[in-house]
Amino acid sequence: MAPFIFLHTIGRYNKVNLSDILNIEANKNYSKIITLQGTYLTLTMVKLMEAALPSDHFLRIHRSFLVLLKHVTALDRHTVYLSGRQLPLGDSYRPALEAFVLFVSNTKPRNYAKSTRSGSHAL
Image (cartoon, rainbow, N blue to C red):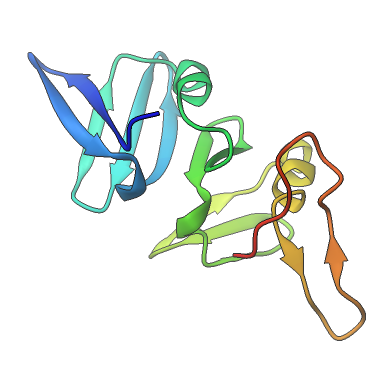
């Protein structure tokens, strides 16, 4: 897959590097793509964006949000933190996120690598 996509916005296609995408937000039939450089609004549903993007880098964390995992800086039970942003973590999406990360705490390490994905990634 190419390291970039072209997003159709008003009257033109804008090249966006996948690594620059922070998150994608659902807005009815539109997707709001938040990048390091700015924001784009495109007439594409989030579920179609999710299907088109590499699933080993982008993850749905809520019915309205996709994130690029490399930009996740912290998480708790109900929130995913990105560079200057806080997004809700839906209960039904938490197991998929936990499958990607290695948790180390004062008790014992927890690795949720038993998923259909390619393994766990440290944040």
